[in-house]
Length: 101
Image 1 (cartoon, helix red, strand yellow):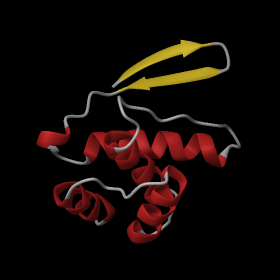
Image 2 (cartoon, rainbow, N blue to C red):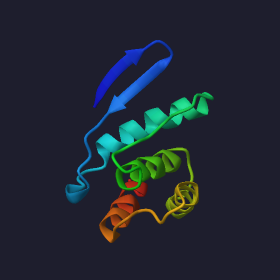
Image 3 (cartoon, one colour):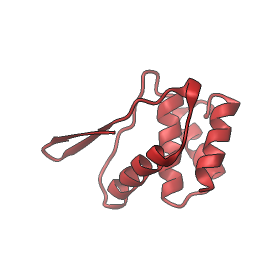
Image 4 (tube, helix red, strand yellow):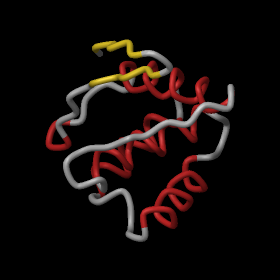
């Protein structure tokens, strides 16, 4: 994870390969940091190339870090995105593992 500091902004860059989703520890750290920003009243933006797969996984992980159950988090992100998330059964399984540390 790379931190880039700009005045009043924090940027996290984390390459996430959906074909090889691995351990959840790094994502837990990122999700926790983003959840803390939201809890402090700050806005966050999560993006990837198409804004569906990887960004949805991170968005769900942030909501889980904030105490929302994984199915509720998946539903919220799907409604906000206007499309089903996660995109694959493997991504759903990864989120289920992520939500049960």
